[in-house]
Length: 262
Image (cartoon, rainbow, N blue to C red):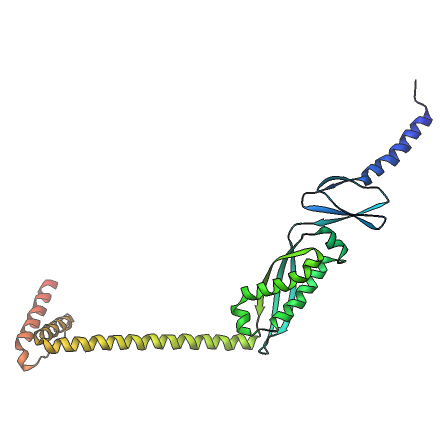
């Protein structure tokens, strides 16, 4: 039996109505997401992951991402406890652990975390000296994380890490620190040089004592020194009157060297 025009129009109307309704009713929630469902304004619960069904025009769905989110806290100009003006920025890593609380306890948890991070950053940095800020970053990171996490947990948010990105110092302070570092290097160099002189002096004193006890060793040392001097060409070696043998030895050494070079 052929289908009439009325049946075709009816089928088209049903399809036009049913397809949008099915599209609005069937939702796919990814593994890293949860859907917080409200029915006529009242909380139903969190659903997902996978395929879920909702009532069109009755249920309202809000997705929450459970992955770690990064918040870049803008650079803040802060005065430390020892009255030094610095510019500090940070990064906050957090994730939603309670989707229902993240939706019902705070209107925009991403913005709230960023604002809370700015406030805590200013409070913590303002309570420490510049030296602690430069040398104890790990400790400051942990302190800032604990303070933010204590508040964020009531929003269903877990702060996993906080990292200070950079600390910008005034230009005049950087020049002063560079001069201080240079002076410290000079001081260490002079201490090392003085320590070397002290050790060398101790060795010379010990050698002098040994030469005093063994005059023959002293004469041998003198001979070795004269031989080293005699290696220079056109050099006249003048020795003491009692050192004739030494002078002869040096002269013979020079004569042999000149013959070899010819």
